Image 1 (spheres, one colour):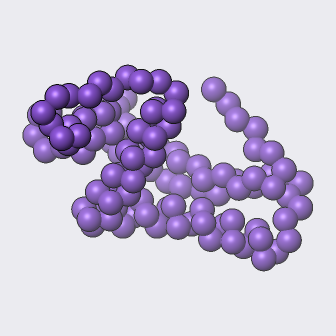
Image 2 (tube, rainbow, N blue to C red; image 1 turned 180 degrees about the horizontal axis):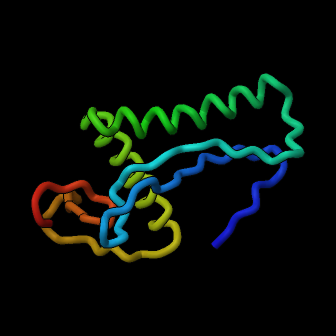
Length: 115
């Protein structure tokens, strides 16, 4: 799947850097910023967009050594995904006797050991 950057869009690009002997990605990556060549944003607005994109890159760096930052952002991402999913479909059932406190594991849930 490809995406063509449109006017006034600023993209955050992730590129896998290294692969092991089996061709599996090692987790090392580089980041980049991509802009549409016909960008018409004024300098202040473009600077703010680039500021936001570089904050994404800084988050990736900080999340490597600060579990609180990672866990906080992960929880918010999961909440947002749940909100989006709740709007589209009713895939979760109410579980009687849990008081609404049901732990849901997703493909994005950070766990320890084998879960």
